[in-house]
Amino acid sequence: MARLKIHTEQHAVARIGWLRAAVLGANDGIVSTASLIVGVAAASAPRGEILVTGVAGLVAGAMSMAAGEYVSVSSQADSEAADLARERRELETQPEQELAELTAIYVARGLPPGLARQVAEHLEAGNALDAHARDELGISDQTTARPIQAALTSAVTFSVGAALPLATVILTPMTAMIPAVSAASLAFLALLGAVGAKAGGAGVWRATARVTFWGALAMAATAGIGALFGAVV
Image (cartoon, one colour):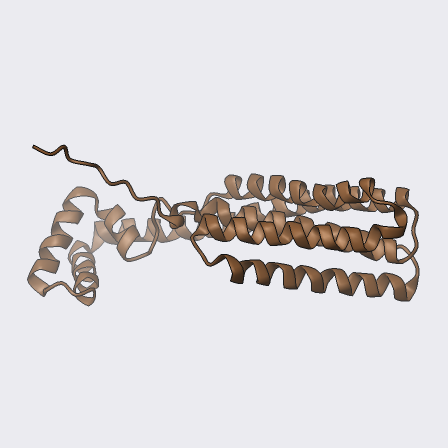
């Protein structure tokens, strides 16, 4: 008798919580810090001032990303908690209406009414709130809001992303500062786009092109401002 094999699938949606925050943090770290550096370098600032500006941008950006992610994802978590509390009350006060609502969801998905009713009854007998959270509200373990995870992921990946153009500043002669930082940052962005797309199961080339285009646009804009005003902003 052949031995049964257990097939375990790895779905990208399971990574959606931390992956979004990681890609956003790293992308923002590279783009914002490289743009600051290019803008200040275009204003003919010395290396020391460029480094101070970059480090300040790293620290401020990491803290801002962490705070922003925590606040925004906490708002999502609060909304989810409010929806679940309301659903719990409705299951207690109007169970028949909730059963009919769940049945209608399964009918809309293609089940015959009788079978849909049986499925709804069976799921509600197990864990009614979980069934309604998943199928009525769209809340699951994979997609539920995790504020602390999002905040820490964004802060760490922002810092790593920002450190890359800063390292280029340290290793590059002043005469080649702007093209070196720009080229290195675009290469880092392309790599980030490819890695993020691969982790999320999306197309690599489209994600890479999208990330590098907006990064190049941001650096070009700040370089133009620095050259125009000739002063450290």
